[in-house]
Length: 65
Image 1 (cartoon, rainbow, N blue to C red):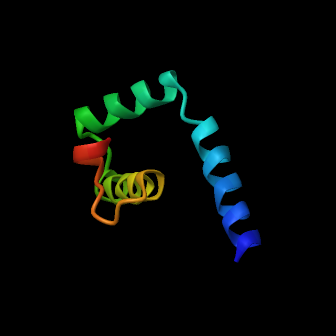
Image 2 (spheres, helix red, strand yellow; image 1 turned 120 degrees about the vertical axis):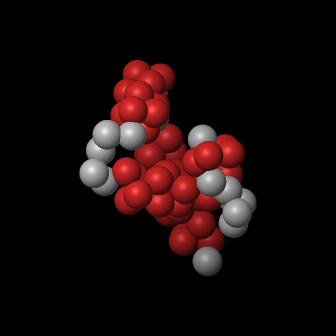
Image 3 (cartoon, rainbow, N blue to C red; image 1 turned 45 degrees about the vertical axis):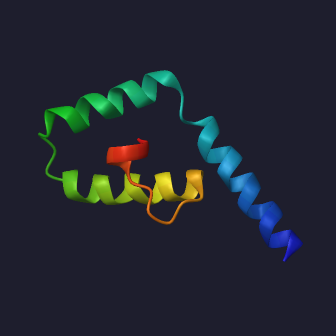
């Protein structure tokens, strides 16, 4: 169990490292424009990322994003 938790924490740190200000700004621009055909999938993925990062089962991109 300890090894699994360590691996999960390492993955979380790795993913958060890629979330710099520029990439978040670009992502918000695309989401606000609503022009991508993959918007539904993007929101689902962002919701899951928010749930993972916050540790809240009900977290969503609309609220925590």
